[in-house]
Image 1: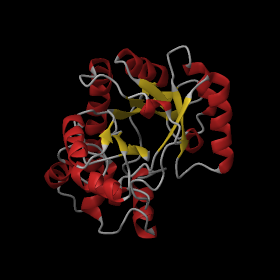
Image 2 (image 1 turned 135 degrees about the vertical axis):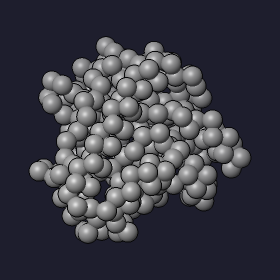
Image 3 (image 1 turned 60 degrees about the vertical axis):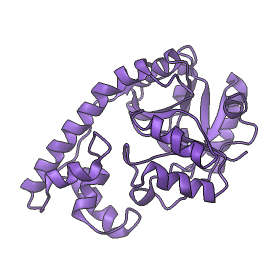
Image 4 (image 1 turned 120 degrees about the vertical axis):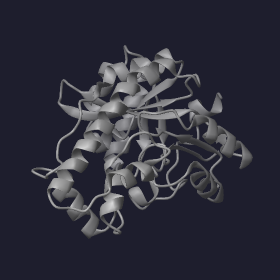
Length: 271
């Protein structure tokens, strides 16, 4: 078994189509995959169909953009194996996606006012099939540089960070509400890359809401982060997951299957 349970497609902020991601995963020997596009399950039917055509098991997935209001930190909550209709998840994420899209439209207005040439309609078109425009789509229209280059990162920070002309963020949903929505839809809720967002302290507080796991294997995790995940998983009886967090040209240079979940992962074995 080789399970990459953290990939993104063009249904959110990934650069590649579902088919392109699946082809790369199949070439890497991935046997199980989960697309965890941000705040949407719109791509599930295509993901299931294409994965089956390539002999790969697909698990319904999502990554919900949430917030730890106690510590004033972002936290991402992964959801797996929920019912396909995902009514509670969709209800929670609808407002979130609308806020993000509206914010992106505001950001594009600010960027144009700052003197940048930006075709808003072209950005929206390039985002399809995502109904939401992300910063990556805006950057794609502003520069030919790749995400990992110094030039890209300099422009990104100039626009979207600190005192940048398009800086700022939306109000995310509470992490506990994200967990509850996933559990309500019959799924397994997992805290994503806690080492990246310093989410370790939050994990015990989500148990009563039904938290089921923690992401262990991620490119942003140090050995110390992995050990913290292992200790928490043992203490609270949580599963450990992992994946490449693949975004294609819109993210870190990592391929599907380069990082996978622990081989004894119950979330996969029991499906």
